[in-house]
Length: 392
Image: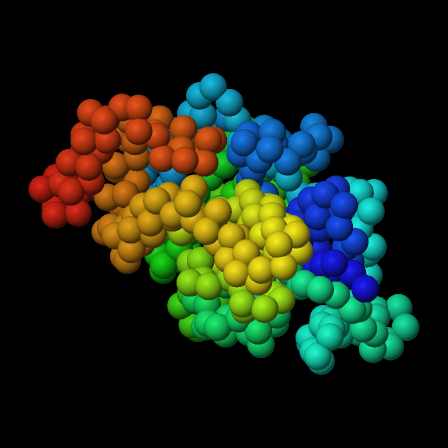
């Protein structure tokens, strides 16, 4: 009998499992293994500090973000007093799983099938990858960390089958030598309807490699062609392709993360990817941590209502950030005229500083009210066309 079975061994599941094992719980983790999620790989300094990520996992340290508009307007935003760390999910996820195993987590490789219950126990049923046999793990609680379109969520948590999402696709390529269009210390974010009609494209350096991709929620878009076009536009069409990956990315946190009995969700399964930016690693790992906290509280008290703590703890700190980012995405990602205005707004030094202060620290910065007022007025002016998109 396990105290907790974690379904999914990505950043969220591995973090939840490790935290629980270090707190003395008997934990199992089931992961499919071999799957690499498409991800730009950006992590803020707060994640590196909070989750003790070693330098060996940081494949690049980014000091500039370049915003590119539909008309090819370019705005370089320096990252002051810090950097954006880059990881390669091919290596980062196994590192987190191995660390969880060293903490005492029992790891199983296979495919989650379902949860079965009777009067006195809950069992997680999975198919073992090596043998093909159907196996059962008896447990008191289950953490569903099996990604967007989570099978745990779909069959156990209200609303788990209705999470809106975009599809992300990227290609990992061999990085070229630094040149006029590619800087190994700069992330490029491309706001262009020709690449993505409702999200954005990206070129993120990973040291010896780079992630080039895009996301969209619009049906019928050829993601591979859009990425090929992005590579041409970025001068990367001649670079060797190492691997290709695609997956759904949720658009908003679920209204409920538990079933009021024995299941709580974490990470993409709970919908915790930041609107507008699509950033997910930090929020996934934090989601795993609060799910572990909720599970520990439930095991200690015997009160299933303590599973609600996961969502409560997460949203108490990040609800405002998600609300602001969601409003920004709704306002500026609608069409190319809006995207042009958004990139124009990014010329503003106060916008640049507050944006990256919020990114690095994972909270809204309230120390400079006059700057916020100025940004609000400029934002309103752009949306109401009181200024032209060419104004900087």
